[in-house]
Length: 410
Image 1 (cartoon, rainbow, N blue to C red):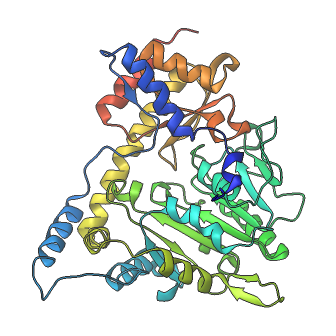
Image 2 (tube, helix red, strand yellow; image 1 turned 30 degrees about the horizontal axis):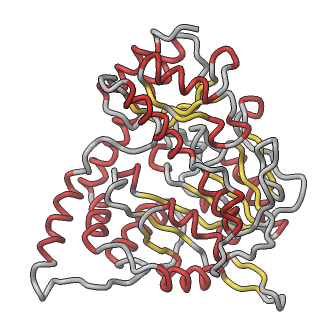
């Protein structure tokens, strides 16, 4: 009889967002006329930038003629996109990235989840708490952890608490770790790490021969000067860090799927025989073996954001969502709810009133004012007592939601 990967059985019975969907569906079935405003899952609501639409229309036409038809493309990405990414996001910021150090994919979630495949299962993993579930869950699936403990933590994982008490900036681990997941701007807290804080992590990684897995999916939302847009702005980071980027929230590509990962050839790991091997070589093999490449049409759309008009339209899109974030943050403050984030990120992380549990607050919002958010406890034990709202709704729904919050009774 075929056997299963028992590591999957270590995971809780339901993925966070699946449980949210289940509760909302049950409420909607019992209350079919309920006008539900969704500020939970971080999906965008505004159309793709017009330059992307035009570029993809043209790319579709390319597929209609033999002389411009594109079949299988390079798994690492077409040069028209990779060169534009390197110039605009790295070279123009004084960072050197080689063409063979960038890998275009169908999104940073996939890459953040798949990257652990090129690391040995004996590696000690450190993650922030609260944390984007994909980082932890994929390491559990791979067998890099023990079982789930009563306190909500997995055995064998080093957790880095991020709460209001430490300004949501994790302390360096007191024990040696090998793989470090950092997300900045952070999902779910909406907070950031300063240049000084990030430098501490790079120095730790160099001293301990660790690798930082740096999720920069929300880099386009950074407004403050002291927050690096890329970890490679920190001296030495190209020796110890792999960076993930996405077009999903930057340009509304959640439905068209496109992202990329930077794996410098200077980031290495140790093989069983003691030799050092570039992770770039391993990721290239994994990428070309298990991935056929992002669609030509989608890559043409992604490349369009790097034109002068594309940059203008993307900035307008980001500004739209950040205005939503301001409206939510200030609306919560006006009714006495403590909120964080929403300055360099499209997420608002609020403290639940009256020490209410995260899921109780979820149910209260859903049942009393028909608003859906995300319970902080779903991101880890340190998320208990917090709640995430996204700024990706429409302006109308954002304003309506804030008005409904004022009607909550405590």
